[in-house]
Length: 337
Image (cartoon, rainbow, N blue to C red; front, side, top):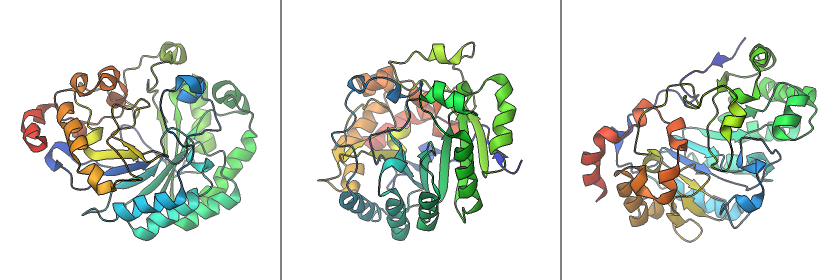
């Protein structure tokens, strides 16, 4: 197998000790949420429940290209480059008709050390693959939903030509240029005997590969039904859950939604909206009083940050030792007064 198996880490490698870097004049991560739509209905995702139960997500389906360029132009004004610009959010980024142009523009502006897309990969035909590669995409993260046509039907509720799907991924990998390919699957999408098959099918057509662990991200979904006998006691990347009462995400990242609303984390329910990038500058939002006040309240713990945060468990499934802020809370409060 050619791919490096990732356990307990991400393709981005070693993380910075967050507390010693705060406050950040430049976010480590800006997540672009380009389109509120998905071509799958995976049983562990918000798209498995009716849209009427999603709560408020976005008042627009697709991000306008002109306004996206405004965001990128403004991000270029931060004192430093982002560590990552990531196309993800609550939807499938490849459904956006301008996704390759979005990548190209961000790379042209040289705003981030890495430009990533998180995708289910089903739309990766030859034309789109070459467009993304030629645009300069740094990393493609592909979430697999099973090792057979039948598993996709039961888990993602879609009929696919599985063999053609694999061929499309092979084409991307063969022509990837400098793009790194990371293929991953959630453990609940595999039966025990299928783990070997997963590595056999995908291990030679990516640079990194992993079996990730299920994250209980949507309150309305019964995750115990999906896990069977497995317990939800590991982070997404396979490390033990850490005791942390402070969510680190608002201190190092922000997400820009299709309608321009900026939120401080990756939660499917928003604890707050810290600004709207269609009418405010990205820098003003990042450094603004509303975002600062939210960070300050977070330093008193998730239970005090907002009613959404008090119920959220998601942050614990993506946290690393370097992100834990609890022991630094009192000294950090002075920086966010």
